[in-house]
Length: 342
Image 1: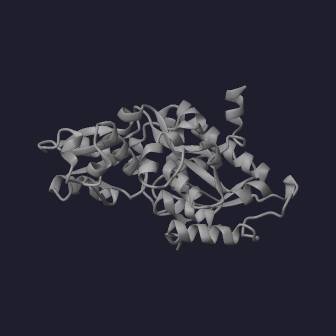
Image 2: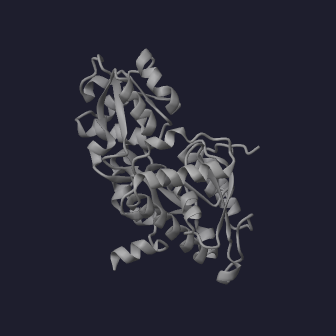
């Protein structure tokens, strides 16, 4: 039985990352190794009942001779990139702000492609009961909002929305964010255990279908189509395995592009085949609600993917000075980025 990897604090992740970065890990080739001697098997964490873009890339044949080695399912984005930073896995993905936080804390990782985001079909909404007295941002002062985890995408979106609507940081501190499993959020809103909550994907579709909830706003209403998070690799892995890094990154980008351009029914059929064939005792029931990849421009990263959150990152004390996006990412290994630039 595969087990979740342990959740590490950022500080612990950085210490371990700095410790292992100079050592030979389970998936590290030697310094300056020829392309033929580079790592060909990448360890990663998956997501139950879902197909990740690296998994889709592998199934579509976009990873060439690279293999993916599933070591369990992630518990959150921050945990996923911490596992990559500490050499428990070779890559992981998380919200842009979590990537910044990890790198600012000293972790030797770099983002190589976007992997999730929001568009008009796929987005996160923030809901209250239909008869709630909460009508505008200021009404949330003193109230509770359910989010999947603290210090990540939803906290940043909520903070940004409240800030743009005139609330001070002192006001915002009075809005209580409550970590809650996404599967439990709808019921918690309906029972009044929280005053508002975050819903996305199939959970959002089902809640809307059931009625009785009202949308306050959505992240796509706030930002338009945008990338929300990136896949990172360790700097030493990139340095020792540049060809593998390029094959992997470009393969993921091609998978995102394929999902964006392929008829929806075909994408769902492919996802169903992948889940059925991997034998993890999962359900494919929710795949019918899939609408779009939500990732713009085949995963190409831009400065704005990080500067979008600068005010929140500063208010949270994650960055002290002006944000320098170039230190967090590279498009060097995404061949679709070069094609777009050319």
